[in-house]
View 1 (spheres, rainbow over the protein chains, first blue to last red):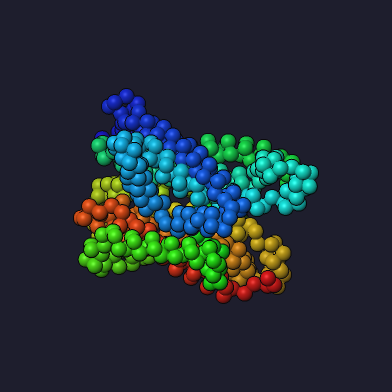
View 2 (spheres, rainbow over the protein chains, first blue to last red):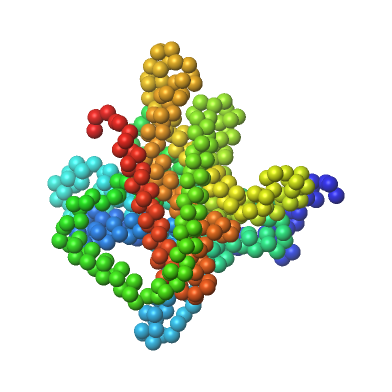
Length: 242
Length: 279
């Protein structure tokens, strides 16, 4: 049995139950769901946070600074644990006040919540940098034309900051997909935890971890293709730097 | 990967860096004093009303855990940086097979989660090694049976890949004229590299380098999942022993914030010692 083909048992990756391929794929789908949800939630927080940091009053600005500082100085793993327990506890406490009894919020919602809070701080910083990179003259010109602040935001600031924000935001998307792996530590059944269970049950650790690695890598590479397209569109009309 | 037009921007968004340090006079504004008082009240009530009676018992172990975390951080950052320099250099000047190899290494490592790499090394290789008698009898075996070499390996590889990308940009960004000037003075290629190219590249990469080091600190608690007893693992033990949820985690967050602050201060001192023209 020295044949190398028997060393790797590809049957373990089969989609139907004797194989674990289906389990891995369902974990992969869960990972993508959390990444998309967390990224979208984070982006919403980021837009609010960036506006708060740039245009808010002194107190709001300081509070935002605290938020981003804490998230940027404390490991994601610790934040995820804290938010996971604190989030579910706080929700149940609030529901208890209204007399609705406790609910067990699903792992998906909790995962999206914690990834979103972490991503929110990162995208706050990215968007703040991008908004500050918009030449002040363009905004002044818009004001001089008599645009309202809202119109200035939607017509000038947001479109003009996009080329500056997209490299950072696309990096954040790739980071969001990888941060979902951290949820394995709180026992959420996403790809990494599923892989570990499959590997532990079959004892073929290398095969399953490599398979999961290929899935993550494929997600990154496919995202990269789309990012290139988006970037090219956002940068149209820009003078290409040599 | 996404073009490194602004790798610093993303690193800066994710890691606390010296530019974010508050200046001493920035505290003396009326609203800040009020906010500071509120924060002090919050800290006081956390210290007063929550349970901290477990703390004295675990203090020695916490100290050891912090030392393990720092040892992990320092050793993997230095090793990773030593690998990152050739990785970056090869991508700028190397022959194409080496260039492709270095690029695919960076892409694969940066495209998969660190936790997965860590488990691949620990569970995968760790289960493979005992099957080879040659490895079991070698002098390395006592180390390979421990878990920390796998943690060090995974963290080093990941730091090398991220930093290799940064060094590539830094090497490529050193103005060609400076290198040509070195050549014109009759320096050998090695001397040009040692005296001009490498120092200039490191100087250019320094702001990103310190952000990446903070990110590396933020990545170290992952080694607790493979039974390395760092500060995170000590806190997990506290939580298991005492069934207290929040207090240990809050303390852990505080410890990491202090470590980050120390790291950032150290980097600022280092940066200030490097002379720059003008400014």
